[in-house]
Amino acid sequence: MTTGSHSARLLLGALLAPLVGVAMAPGPLGPPTRDHRPAPALALGVVRGPAGAGLAASAPPGALRQTLTPGVPADLPAAPAAPPVAPPPPAPAPPVPAPPPPPAASALTGALEARLADPRLAGLSVGLSVWLDGLGEVASRNADLPLLPASNQKLITAMGILAHVPVTDTLVTEVRATGAQDGARLVGDLILVGGGDPTLTIRGPHSLDALAVAVRARGITQVAGALMADETRYDSLRGAGGWLPEHVPVFIGPLSALVVDRNQHRGDPAYAADPVPGNLLRFRHALARQGVSVAGGDIVGPTPPGAVTLAARASPPIGALVADMLVRSDNLSAELLVKELGRRARGVGSTVAGLAAADAALAGLGVRLAGHSADGSGLSRSDRRSARELQELLRAALGQPWGNHLLESLPLAGRTGTLTRRLRGTAAEANVRAKTGWIDEGRALSGYLTTAGGRRAVFSLVVNGTTPGSPVVGAIDDLVAAVAADRS
Image (tube, rainbow, N blue to C red; front, side):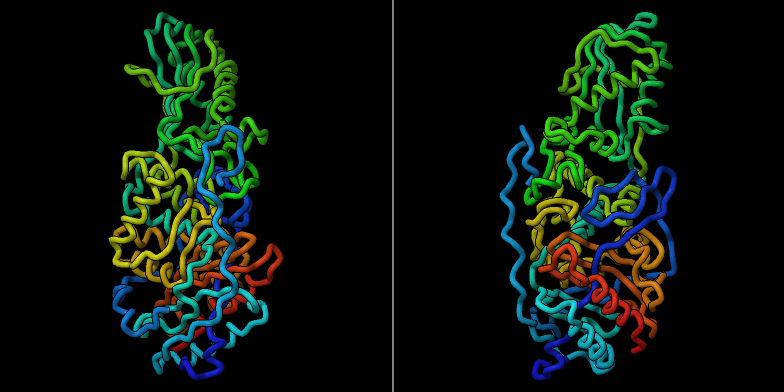
């Protein structure tokens, strides 16, 4: 695209949006949800498909630079203060002229110019970066403009956790005890210890009921001491900077290392401010159903030294949690995984520590990080990422040991997750693997595909300035389908 061409000014723009559905195993799987909606119970596994098969790292992201133009927490009672909400997204920016495309990419460039002139993108801030194997970055518009990434922020979370934590590790919820067991009587306290598992439920095979059954199987029917809850694996912030007041508990439950039924089984302000006492009461009821009585009261605090483990339940493996987070765009899993990353990499189970660890890991990929992270899910209006940054990160990830896991964990167009109902009947169907993004003010789509000409492609499209009813998803999909149909 030449800088003097009028048509080139109209060049690039529609790529991404929300998606729907998912398939994984074992465990319950809920219906598809918009990225900013509360997600149902975890679905496990990775759906494999033809898209991206054989994708490999090509030239490092920095190698292309020489040919390119640089182009709250919710207001909850008792919740600690968080950073202020960021200013609204930038006003629509004038298109930044892109460098001339390689001759072999001229047909695709023209097709994308036409897509960027789509009236559905009029008046919006559009960031686009499209890279093709053997050709480099063939299309860009405002590629370095920091924009709200919406749930494309989960790509940062996924890369950070996969770079630091083995995919086979699990998050374990335990029941511990102080004192000795005298027949059927425990002479001490019983402690429910949260392990950061986003999938624990009240009832069912992976639940408080199951833990209570295990306690009863030890022969215990009476607890002389107190019933305690320990959530100290993570900090007690219930949200993240830049969240809107309505986010908790409508779009996500209050954050804690002790999560039960996604911390959304109650919606009152007291529970939103501190879900742990309510979750501990649920455990008391579960014990009672198994014939175990607790004489003492409920206490929230750290586990006393010397406590022994009586029962435990492990989450699905980290790799499955990451896959589910990406496929269903699960906000809760994203936020807890960020805190777990902080604990493992920095010794502090907090959002701030986890995001710092993720940034450090991604900096090691050789990509210049110009964006800003305020949370792990993309709910925050303080997050900022550019299309080129996301494209380069995705491309660099392919060369990592965990890159294939990331690729195969993304929704498959027309088949799984938030892409189940999108891009059907196009060259992108069963081909594109990408992360969707959807908040009121923005839409995004970033991922991988193989063109009709056999070239590997990595793309990112971020659109800001939308409203809840904006029809931009269709424009995004049309642009991605045009890339997939390219035969250059």
